[in-house]
Length: 185
Image (tube, rainbow, N blue to C red):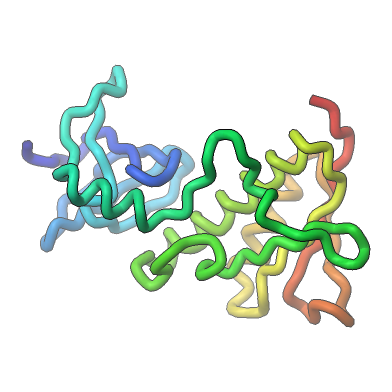
């Protein structure tokens, strides 16, 4: 099947969907996700779906199995937070450095890296709410500040979360402490 502009896509290893906005060389396409981000991705990372979400195109099964094995998936019964320990203050510390949350981080385009990190943080917050955990520390590191800014923007747009800098003594400028309010599910 030929991939064309306007095709609806879904990622194989993520709950992200969007549309093809350009077909490039070397099995690459440019997509725009439903949340407005644009990425250049390899066609082996996506499936083409119809309006009814039926699959119209997918890479061969070998490529799909390889992509699935490369991603760190969380089984249905487990929480994303189960692999984290609480620090001495009883707060779960979540390291958002890309190499801590995906395999082969060098494969990702810069914008997709940030999107993955923010999506992971969002999933951690949702899991904390389900488990009635009231505080988390997100370690974002120093870097360029893009992750920190994106994280603060995402968190401040919710009315049930307060955000402050993590302990300067412990984390320097590389962490944010998040307090979840009104935890009722």
